[in-house]
Amino acid sequence: MKVVTWNINGIRTFRSGIKRALDSLDADIICVQETKVTRDLLDERTAIVDGYNSYFSYSRGRSGYSGVATYCKDSATPFAAEEGLTGLLTNHEGAVGCYGDHAEFSSEELQLLDNEGRAVITQHKVMCQDKEQTLTVINVYCPRADPEKPERKQFKLEFYKLLQCRAEALLKDGSHVIVLGDINTSHRQIDHCDPSDADDFGENPGRKWLNSFLHSLAEEEDSDEEEPDEESEVTDPVNGGKFVDTFRYFHPSRNNAFTCWSTLTGARQTNYGTRIDYIFANYQLAKEQFVAADIMPEVEGSDHCPVWGQMSCSLLPSSKPPPLCTRYLPEFAGKQQKLSRFLVKVDQKSIESEQKNDLPGSQEEEEWRENLNPLGAGNNASKKRSLTTDTVVPKGKKTKTANASTKRQGSLLSFFKPKLTNVKQCEKATSGEEVTSSHSDQISSSTKQESSVSDTIAADTERVFDTAAETDKKTKHLTPQTTVGHSQAKKGATLGFWKSVLHGPPPPPCCKGHGEPCVLRTVKKDGPNMGKQFFVCARPQGHASNPEARCNFFAWVDKGK
Image 1 (cartoon, rainbow, N blue to C red):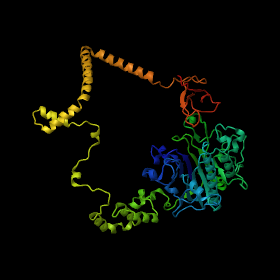
Image 2: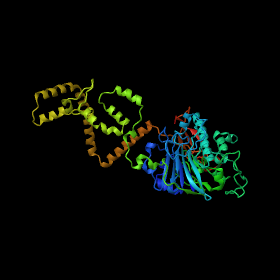
Image 3: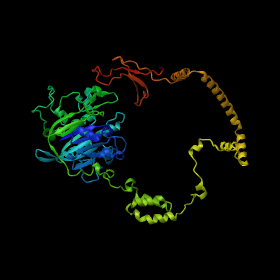
Image 4: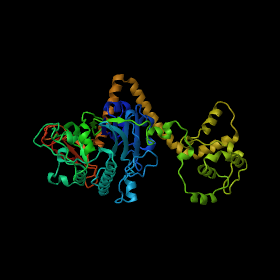
């Protein structure tokens, strides 16, 4: 059995096709985070993949934000699935259950923690050493602590606490548990490219939680071997955490093993990143069933790379997917949907109070009747017909007359185009057609009113035509080559004028470390330097000891230049 976790930074990462991408990962259970897809944007190509059954969790507050999904091969179909960690989003049979003690959380906190689409739980049957057991896979995308938003730091810690509560409750119920995904915290200094404040590194609240959640493995720091010795075992976690970091279990001392890099600084080229994506397994499962775990930095397409783990146990698929499966969604199941599904539920009391103020026979009244009793809407067909024939015209509303209906609606272009009626009439007169006296009077009156304006326009146009005629006479005597040269000179003069008016970006200086042209950046962070521009080395970010990485050149742009 093989599991994979990958923060894909948007479902559009699978541009070559979702099935091809899932098949290339070659796993039974594939958990992806940060899908950035909401319920209304989920399409059939993403939800229904041949050979897989999928389970999604969506953000309910923001579009294009967060979201996780679990794709299981048909040979690994779970018998239970659930969205979220609290159980508040579960309103169907086939839920996982075992929610733990939520006494430390208020109802509002629980609702907010599950409101961003950060967890999907699937429960499977596995055969371990000829014995059928339960395995629960918790796919999570933990929040990021924004330094500019202190409330998000507390939100992240609350999410950690809720995740631990749920995982340990499932473990206590007798199930093996795997927690995998983007945890958004690097555990130790070895998991960070450049740990600042080494003395205070472990004081980070997220790392303190990981220390309590994970069992500390006995490492052989002097050994460079990748595989653990036969004598190195995971001791029984009596006082420590109940879960094991499977990557560090198999690679306790591997350096530069990162799973996330900054795309803004090109840090992946220099492997200047962090390891924040994990596969955690309960102590007994990691000790008895896991045979390998590693990262896949060669797989591109996101600012994260996949992480995989393999176990010796085999999966026992369910006969049919649980109700959370996307293939049961009405728009993908091929079932006709009722109009009432798209309508918002309204309070009964508010409906009655508003119905009293409605106009008799109004359309709103009939829509409310259909919403309240959608099945009995057909019985009201005769009433609707009678209402259409005997319609009471409300007071204050004017009815359209026959004369008004014959009047054509004016075009919007009529407000921008001049009326050509006078010109047409003049043309008819010159061609010999008769024009009525009333029309001629209108023409004469209008021409008198516009004579002052037309005289000034005519004088200007005469000047323009005179100059144009002179230039035409001159250009007739010129050769084609001189004409082209004249036009190019004119373009050059125009280009020089605009360059003198609109100054482009200043020429980039060369960095002192490599002597290469720098790149121009703009400060986007709120503060006194917001909007200011500066030059930095164009090379990707990396460790200070790496000569191929970015040097420390920095220069503000002088506005006077």
